[in-house]
Amino acid sequence: MTKLVPSKKIGEHVITQPIERPSNDFLNSILGVQFDVLDHGFVRVVDYMGSDTSVVQAARTSYGKGTKQISQDKGLIRYLLRHRHTSCFEMAEIKFHIKLPIFIARQWIRHRTANVNEYSARYSLMEEEFYIPEPENLAVQSTDNKQGRGDVLTTEQAQRVRQILIDDAERCYKDYSEMVDEEGDIRLARELARINLTLNSYTQWYWKIDLHNLLHFLTLRIDSHAQYEIRIYAEILGEILKGWCPIVYDAWMDYRVHALELSAQHVNMLKKALLFVMSEKPELLDSPKGMSKREHMEFINKFELEDYFIDGEKK
Image (cartoon, rainbow, N blue to C red; front, side, top):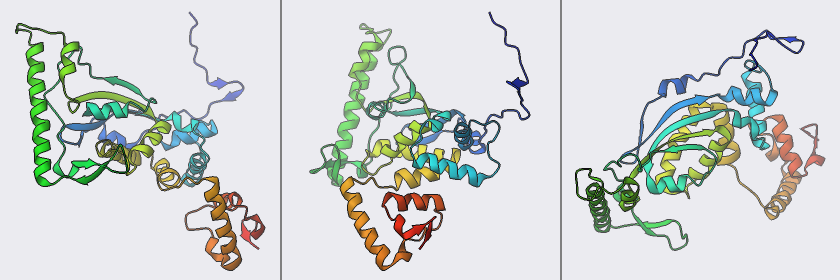
């Protein structure tokens, strides 16, 4: 077997600065802390690797902390996210312990971009815990959205539905307990008995995901059209992201959450409107506060308004 021989040199270059493991004070302060979700669910950060700095390091293939100025790191991260350079964001990872209803877990697992290890009902007994929606979250089927909700149920209807859910869950769990009772006369295998449980039963898993795929997950799941029960999990994950990678978080909010996707027809309509604005009131297209000169020129180039500018300045 080849022995690992430590060296202070890489090629002809002497390493003068050690590689430091990025540490985040916010995440360090909440490791293992439970954030409650729904009636019995929770989210906990178990471990993490990397930070905003890791994205910069990967982009520059550098050692240590990369650039010394935060403003330079911020500009680079915003450029990378704006232009969809995704691989650098894969260099930071985070691991969660999450407890959630089974029906949400099945929706969640459609994001096939994470490492998941779920509680096994083949080996362990399921707990007697079920998600029962609050009355304000019980609504009729939407008439214009086949997978969404419409108007909220009346108080009487909501109470009836909640009681149905409670009765069914408790009855199914009672039967489940009887079937797996090791001292009973059935002693059914747990892997079979679990099929009788309702989908509002709770499961748990460890969910490890890189930063790039976390951003994609959150973009879809914090959207107002996402199902309420998964959305509030996503909102908590979003707050954790904000404390973990604040520069990435701000860029993601700008370029994904609060951004719009335009079709070619939309772009042509907007281009005509912008050309009119430039001819009538060009000051309306001055660079807004917080936008870099580079990003402003990218906007100008997208809509072919270069004739009105020279090196970023209006003619």
